[in-house]
Image (tube, rainbow, N blue to C red; front, side, top):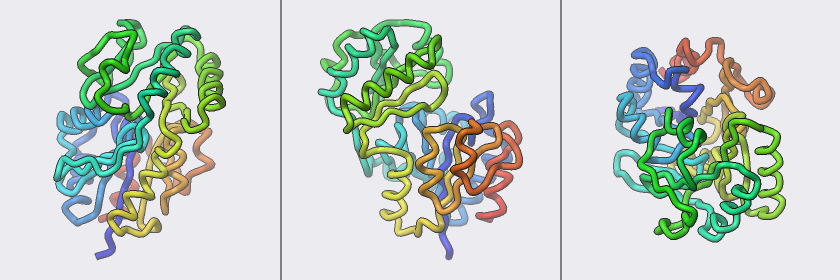
Length: 269
């Protein structure tokens, strides 16, 4: 069998604008995995949020994997084991947290199943609409971290340029960290060893699937590294036009009209 692997972003790609999947898309994923191909849910979300959403939408099938927190963590669904973990350090949290507070920017980080925030705010409320988590509210998140977290997330719903300046400052001061936008208001802070592209390469090697047999689909700038790394990179037509130039394929239909499934069903089945 010529086994293939699909890395798919969730929000804006696999999921429609109501954060749902159609029965058609669910059936395509089921058929792909049943045929022996591999599907990887690759998202900036935490593992808790991805698993919770995937279970509610009934899109977890045998043989699937998850690339969480922009590739900082790879999780094998069948065995419930973490295969790869490239976190930021607790020392990084101690450095970045007060920087964000000084710049009047919301910052948050994660345990395996909880969201750590400095206070309840409109940014937290907005984030929790799509990614509900149990909350820990504290000014000293490092006291609640039993291990280094997969990432930090800075949110500014009012001033994208301020968030951009903050990201550049963080990367300049701490070059072992990468900062990238997952949308206009969310700035991801991850280890420079992580990234959706790096996780694609790692998992293809782990599963002994040639890169040429890999597909990656996304709609935002944090998807660019995996779109470029894949044998076939797919940009969603509803996505940020700035990423189109990095893709091999632009989906004919958007995420509200099964754009990804309409393409991959022809390639995988």
